[in-house]
Length: 198
Image 1 (cartoon, one colour):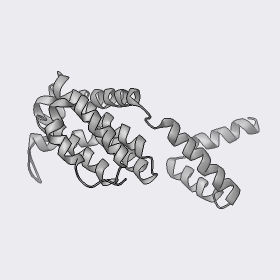
Image 2 (cartoon, one colour):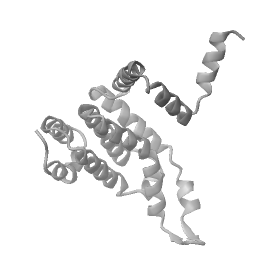
Image 3 (tube, helix red, strand yellow):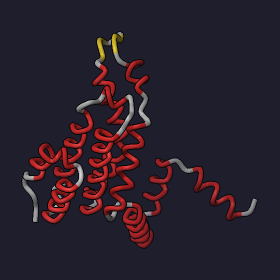
Image 4 (cartoon, rainbow, N blue to C red):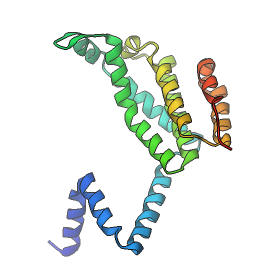
């Protein structure tokens, strides 16, 4: 095995925690720290949503993941348990939350990094995916989650608003809601009226 192959194999075998630890050690050198920051920013910006095409792709992914949820899991997990009774709606809500969790983690990360526009496009994609699932999906699971998609859309929008988006971002979101998840504008538009920064 040559040295290059061995180095690649070691890097490929690092867990996420190992990789973070290695980066922290490397970042103790100021020159390397600057380069790590530059590469990380470039990587994140390159993989973040930047336009309405990306919004559509996110919406498709969210909808597809929601449509993949199995109604049988609701039936299996709902009912009497040793911890009490679990409602079908509660199980369905947990399942939707599990699908949305990685998207919401990315949303929070973009907000922490000041990537306001990227967070806005991601939020749009999540909301649109939930809307399409609610209004277009033929999934049996949807029957057990009747009001949950709009509730999760409201929660997602509130999370986005908590990140203090710029006035420009709020205006983009307002235009998006007026033109896309139109049947939900009555519920979503009031959430945009809360305080905004310039």
